Image (cartoon, rainbow, N blue to C red):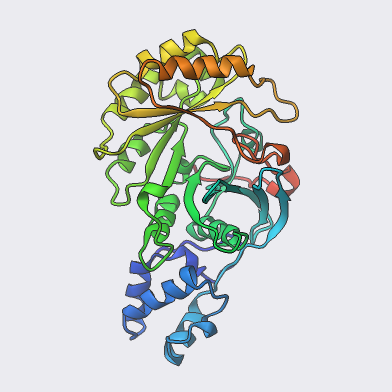
Length: 361
């Protein structure tokens, strides 16, 4: 079983444990393996707060669970409600550090945007989270509990349909814990999410992209592109110095995709930097031969931003150029902009982030 333990609490968090691991643990305790399936149902479908509430377990199982695990819960230290119906949460973790997540309202469903790290090490020039640096990775349970907490704010009959790893952090920089969280999200006894309804976004870590393509859990892959020349992309995203555009595109061409799947390329439109029709032309040439779609994101300005949101006519011209040449190009009007909850805006103060002395990548 994984030794993943919350950094400030020596009692293992049961949300860090996959169902298969829990089945093996049950057997080690001379308990039936199927008890793990029951525990998962109580945790993630019935959302109980204590082992004592798991009515069909029996006393031996409840006693063993209570002696070895704790059930974690994230309570929002702050919840900012946007005029568009979105809610930005600030959650305080066991060690006092904070992360942000966003519950987004759509016409017939909700999406939750989760964080995978406290801060981020990638240093993207346009992103507020980058200003924090990397504080630490989140455990699988800390990722999972963001969704559990957001689900409490769904309206009656509300449908939480999508999970996107687009919050604080680079998911592939915390690869093992993100994969464990994905296993819990898609487990039939857990959240039972469709793999097609989960998207993991990366700045372009090529070894992890290759590895992700071979995983059993086939979540959607999104690549944060944001520049169509190495000069511009390196200015915006330092990762391009290590994995440049040619290498990134080659890795994406080799990425295994089912017939109905595409790679999503996220492209932030910044005034005078990435928003020209010439950039649109370069984008088409760059991605030629790939199964892809483009998600266009007009830049979300934040206090102190050095970049600007483009004019609306330039946004439309960029999109229309792509559409006119057969490229699937959606326009994301980011939710939660008025509460600084939109793409690239998530950040917590240094007093609540508290960078650690030395952290593994």
